[in-house]
Length: 405
Image (cartoon, rainbow, N blue to C red; front, side, top):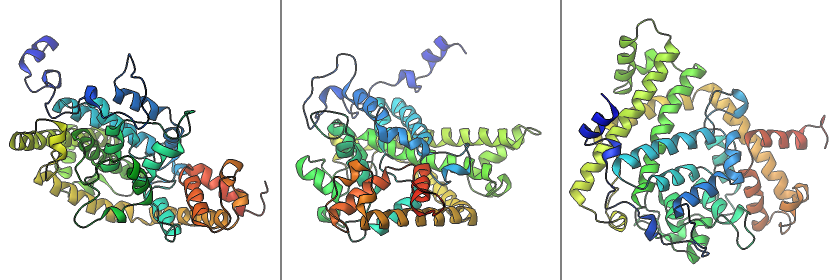
């Protein structure tokens, strides 16, 4: 079928999707904390995206891991490749739904900026180290990076992003203030920022942020299948026993007999991503038709998310997560990497907190003495910004007696 014919007949295709009335309108953005002249060539959300891509924290994602520590191999996902995959999925879904794909992409690119080295193990260890100093939360750290730690402008700290981007990053997984969680129970960085710039933490985020959140789930689950197979932590035969995932892998194997398993697995993962995006789009359209929101503000005021998977797809996701938990995340090889990572971060944190004079100058000069809450937060910021490789190298310099300087 020609492109012209497809455009005539494809009523539900991406190119035929009009802008949804409940999409976020960049022309009606709530603006930035520090007012700036608008760009003549880019929307506010496109400018936010560009600022994130040029941020030093974004560049460091290339050597921060998801599951495997960076030195385990070049083929496994990092936080950077994951963020790019999430952004691609978010753009695709947002475009099909008639939402602002620039905002969806921006939130997707920013959502992991606060993650420390060594994946979730690093986050757990930093939270344990900070237990007497308000703890550590990667989502709060992302807000801290975007509004405080990135120092690229002469007149303010942070990137001075739009309200919609900051709201979307902080609330992409749903309201933070709920009947079960008071504002006072939120991480310190979120409380401090929102005291002066209200991100309306008791409501849902805008629709583009909700798309980015589920794009994260799609990317995470599917690339963990890919990485787990590549690492030899499980086999295709084991995946075939799962509902939905197994059906897709079996269909590809039957369609391409004799083709190398690596190629068939890549094809299956592509089909899984496509099927999940389709399910997200169909369920979201169903919810939008029922709720009839007339603006992004209507979406924020809803009692539940407007962007969602179907009940059937959620059940499939639960089965897959159980499988990955038992066969991948708890695998002894992964457990050993996590154990090593935790020990590295604990050693670094304890030393820097006790002896802040060992920190690099720009960090040391901000400290308020050993073992203080202020110094603990500075040490936490320093460690959270490290790549895997840098954390390993810092540990070697400080704790390997055969290596000085």
